[in-house]
Length: 212
Figure 1: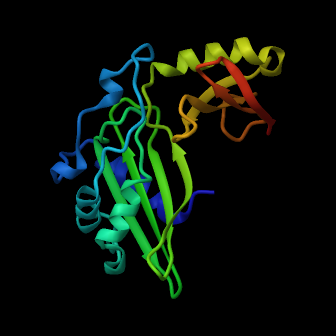
Figure 2: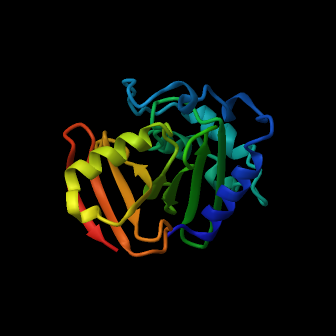
């Protein structure tokens, strides 16, 4: 489940998408605009610790990022865990955080023009400064990939998708390169009954199928 803080961060990021980026660390070439489903792309980690530390210090989220999270150690740990679909920086980078008495949470989100959605990484930072990746929700991929994913899933899953409509996908960070969770719903909406399936695009196989 996405936290309230992460939802607020995504809303803030969406509002910023049409505005000029405030610093070089928050912008980069748009992989979604230049890459196509037929182009060989590979996920990568385009943000180093310095870029993420700048992003934390320049956070537009109300209240910003707590000072105890704005450290080189935390930024370095996050830089090893934040991937983008094609290894290119997002057009917009947004970072938010909050701290309680024992631990902190930190959300890193990114979007790019034309992508089906945004990428979101949620971390827990313990009192000793150790960083753990809690959840990901990744949708900033090339939109032309949707047709390829749907076609491959229809061929692999067959009757399991009868009467269902493809509504979107999320990509997975390495080591699950080339695998996507696809959502199919009977009413064409997220809350409708349907199927979620894990597709290995390279092999064209359905690795897992869940009825929801």
